[in-house]
Structures are given as structure tokens and as C-alpha cells.
Length: 160
Image 1: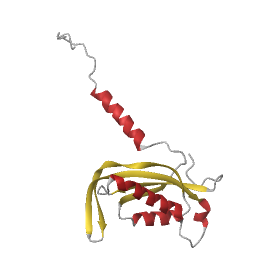
Image 2: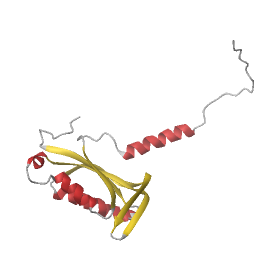
Image 3: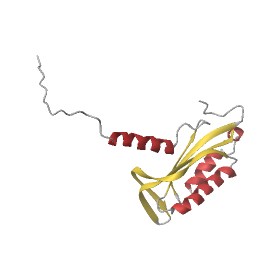
Image 4: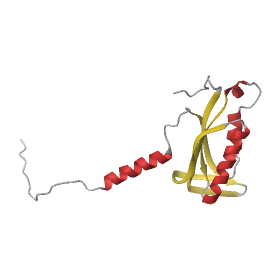
């Protein structure tokens, strides 16, 4: 699995996972995602893959302060975007790396609660949609009653 700069393409692959405030209307999520993609494109990034945000209960409470308001959230819209950036951009001295600029610009967005930006492999091996589907299948299998024969007889066991 190649995670660092790909020598053939001269690109480094990153994945941006983000949480959007639950107070954003579902119709407005597309605008937030387009803003994220615009920030990535402005720094020379090209989208490879991604997953539209979906509502998810959080494991713990998070807060977001916007101006004088403080939002406390127990759920948020979770999404991700995988993109690549030119590897030579990180080699220039005295110039801020585009990934750092992307991170700073996304963190300034009022709609975003939290982000995680990491280097990633080019191929996508996991999606939340696949995980939710597998979980639904597992829950359905657990809900089915097991085939058990009950004769009503009590068997005695001799323990020595």
C-alpha cells in the first residue's frame, strides 16, 4: 500500500474526514461539500473519491464556537473526500504546504465541527456505506430465531 508521494504521478494522496453541524438543513449539505471541494481545488487538489455526509450519532459531545454562540452537539453529518496534491508543492522551502492551507481554511468554516486530514492510500478499501450495509445484515441475522428442537424432555447428565 503506497501512502507517500507516488513517484509515477508526482501526487500525494490525502483524505479529509469532516463533521458538519447538525443544524445545517439536509438541503444545505451540498453547498458545504462544494465549499470543501472548492478549497481543495484552489490549492491544486484533484478529487479521487468521497462519500456524501450522513447523520451520525457521536460517541461524545462536541462543541463549536461561532462568534458569541457556542453549539453543543451529540450528532453531526459525517463525510469524507479523498484527493491528491502535487508532491513537489511540499518540497518548496519557505512556502506553506497546500495541505496545511486546506486544513486551516476548512477549520475556519462555520459549518464544520471537526476535521481530520491524513495521508492515505490511493485505493479506497473502506466506505461508511459498506460498513452500514454489513451492520444491517449482521443485525438481521441476529434477529432471526434459531432453529431449535424442543421435545420438552429433561436430560440428566451424570457428572463423575
